[in-house]
Length: 620
Image (cartoon, rainbow, N blue to C red):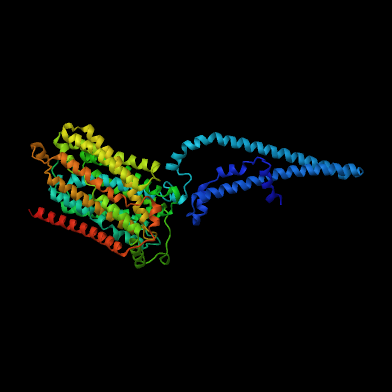
């Protein structure tokens, strides 16, 4: 009775509460709590906090009960003992028992006082360290992630294979730049042949939907992600090793190709299989990242994905200058060796990568998954979000003749590469800034802010094309554009992850990515057409016969601003996406499926035209 009744009385009497349970709550290991309650991961963080506070209050009350009860008992015992002794006075045993009870009660009161003082001193010490904890909270949450569930920790051995895969993807993409842009020409290929080789390498990326559907529906030995990651990288490694073993892959720029130098056909085949293998590993990794996104709750939503993006850009940042330097100094042999070594180093990490062990009866068949995807595409959350993104992105045109202009003004290829590397550096820092400060910001407001910032930054182009071109302004322009582009890229990726559905994570993410890629491809085509319309070539710029470059800059500045009309229909956050899922329209779903089919058809046509151009160039 005292346990349940005493807290109310103690509050009325304003008796101070002990801090013992509060101290225990501060020492509470959130990681163990999450690992022990996976089924309740969907609960809101606010509810858990309120429950913890309530539990600490009730326990504090129990501490006060024990103190108050012991004080009352000791007082009552002493009073009763003295009264009994004075009334009887003849029973020595009873008086001895009463005195022993008094001594025990006094010792108990002393022990309680010592424990209370010890807890106060412990609380004081924790208060002294609270400032340090607050200062380190941001760093601990960003890197150490002490308060993140085990299945969502990016640096745990169970998950480290995912960000490391993204890091290797960034490394390989940077290392392949001199292979795609410089090596074919050094081997005697024409510009048309070089463009064909690049198109063939990127061809598997446009068909990633089918590879993603394969990883979602076909289980290999109980898993649907890790086996495809291993198979994909194995295909890429074998392709590179075949080039190294059956040809002279160590060609140096400026030297005459040897008889064992790879032909353009052989090089094209090797790059195709390397692109196929890396794309297969990528879609499987994307599926795991979306799975982590769907597991995250509250303010942690999206942190795992953004961290992986940071790893990818960090790898790209390292490999771009490294690949260029190695190609200029050592030739292509070292780069091909790196392209095989880095993926191979992922295999030991994949051994520890934890994935849900699925049985065939637990995984929905392909037909059922396709039906679920179709029901998802018809929802307002999908067609309105992707429709607004498509309208916004295809108007994001750029001045593709800007590099040509810089070359005509006396800058070298080395100078332009420096500006590009610094732009990638700022993109990396932009992702870090977004993860630390902008994760909870309104997506719609971020797109508006980046669009206006891009328009302001484009004014630097106007300054340079009107007689003030120099390397310093070019570096500032590229770095600012890189930072703003990163702030725009992160919410775009988060929207695609939020639209993906459980069970078909890789397929839906790849499907929605193809729409975004299609819109960006249209923007690139418009940019190239504008460059041709204004006759922006290095020769025309030097002779003064090129079109009005200032007018071109104004056009590419105003068109992205028109894309803000699509921003008004974008979701503000994941909560709005969830609220749109109950609304469906068959017509909009059919239109969206048509756009997806058109994007695949567009990629197929571009690839076929590249083969045709390649065959014509070879025959000539």
